[in-house]
Picture 1 (cartoon, rainbow, N blue to C red):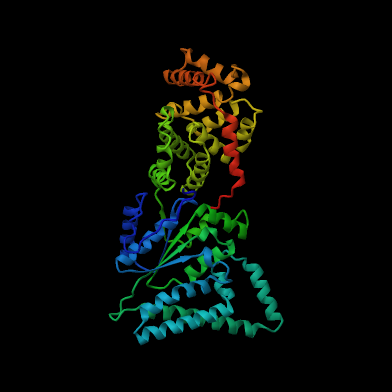
Picture 2 (cartoon, rainbow, N blue to C red; picture 1 turned 45 degrees about the vertical axis):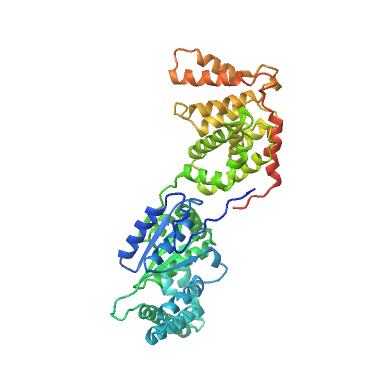
Length: 467
């Protein structure tokens, strides 16, 4: 029995074997663009957290290599424990470039010299005048004051010597990297460097990495593809330079071309999760009960409706589905799931906890949580209105026993609307559905055991779900 989704495995020989989200045409088009683009250049792949950037980049790397291109995948987040991103970069690309220059004495020598120059840069750090040129983001006055103090302390000669040596090291580094990438015919080989997880890094590390790429690695032959959540990264920039800093403009200075990752097929993703969590096997065992036969489809369709309406990321959908999975798998074989209500309550618990808690713990009538439903799915005239009516009637019906047959204002509202000729036909129809569905919960046989459902959902508090 599966209780978590597994990381998608990208086969280097068949990168699209496990492509369940239709990424193949986007990756192939992006590959063609990269092969025909002039370097040096920096491209970004922009998408919010949890939208599948890592999978896209891993497919891209494999597809580039299948097309005889040299590509390196570099996880910025896994290397942000070092002080200088250049150190991590040199460490990660060293093996790849060594394999490219192997057997060529001139290229090998150039790469050795490049690493030596890189070590000098790391040792001394970027000189102050180079930092001053970094898009005007450094506080020049403070730096100049600090350096002026050095002059007054008799350190001017050392400072100028350090600056000269650092500048020479930067020039040597660029020249030798360029030589290492030269072919016999004088043309420059392209090396695609794919950088992932930048927005998960320490703010200072992420900023320094961008600075290094723009000012030290703007070398012919190098093509950078950087995945980022630009909005999240802009918050990191503001955290370093102040809330009033124009972070988006700052980030644009480092990116030559921005690619917006297309939204994934959420339906296909949820279908895949159904397979991973083996829901078909679970629900098949329950089909012996006539009233249980449509549980699987109701759960799936309601979850799709809520996920789309909430505009949830793939990561959020996956995490919520893991919780749905635990609640479903903890349900006895002869107990009805109430799948529409279950899916909604789990979403409400995650994003509208106060309203959820007030309802589930018995203090509140259904109105507050019904308002949450209407907030998530405001257009009840859509083709999904029936699903919304099922959820709303379940919210009302689940309180039936507590009101001893009188389920309050929520039902009365719909009874009035269903017979009100001044409202639209769609609204009348929706309210009629809510009334009829709610009445189906009358009596012991069809009553919703809210307490049992609550216990299974609240059981989630005992589990920790890691992202």
